[in-house]
Amino acid sequence: MKFTATTRDVQGTSASRRLRRAGRVPAIVYGGNAEPTVISLDHNQIFHDLRKEAFHASILNMDLDGKVESVLLRAVQWHPYKPLVLHVDFQRVVASQALTTKVPLNFINGDLSPAVKLHGQVISHVLTELEITCLPADLPVNIQVDLGALDANANLHLDAISMPAGVQYAGNEENPLLAAALPVGGGSAGAEEGDGAEGEESAE
Image 1: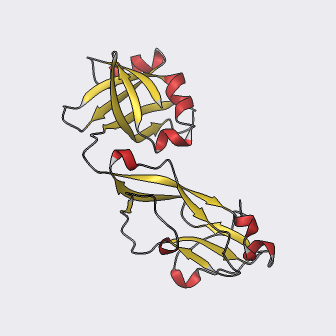
Image 2: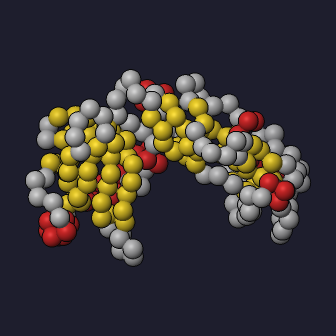
C-alpha cells in the first residue's frame, strides 16, 4: 500500500493547528538509519487508509517528496469525538532488521465447528490481535485461526494454531487464549483461565 507525505519545517502546537485547518495531518517518521523527520499527510487520504485493515499490519510505501521509503504504522491519535485524525507515527523499515508489531487475527470456520453446529453455542474471540516478531518480508497481513474443530465448552490457545513461516509470537503471556466456545445466555468455558471473555460475538 502506498501513500503520499510531505516534509514540514515548522513544528509546535500553532503550526499543527494551521496544518489541520488546511486539511493536513501532522505526522512523524522515525527509526532505521535516519533521524526522525516531521511530515504532513492529506487528511482525507489518511482517514480512508486507516479504515483498511491491511494499512495497520503491512509494510507501507511512503512517497515522501518524491522519494519512496518503507514504513510501518505505529500510532494514531484521533480527535476525542470528531472523525478527525490528529497525528500519526510511522517507523522506517529496514529489510535486514526484525520488527515487532501487532497483527489482527482472522477467525474462520466458526460456523462449522461442533460447538456451534451441533451444540448451538457461541464463540468468543478473546483476542483480536497478536504481537509478533519477524523480518519485514515475512510480515503477514493477519494470522488465520481455524475454529472448525472447536468443540462445546472448549478453549483454543495459541499452541493449537500454526504460525506463518518466519513469524514468532512476541507477547508476554506464555500461551494466550484465543477463543472459547460458550453456552448461549451465560457460562464461561474459559473462566478457569481468568480471561474474562465475553460471548458477545457469534462465530464467523
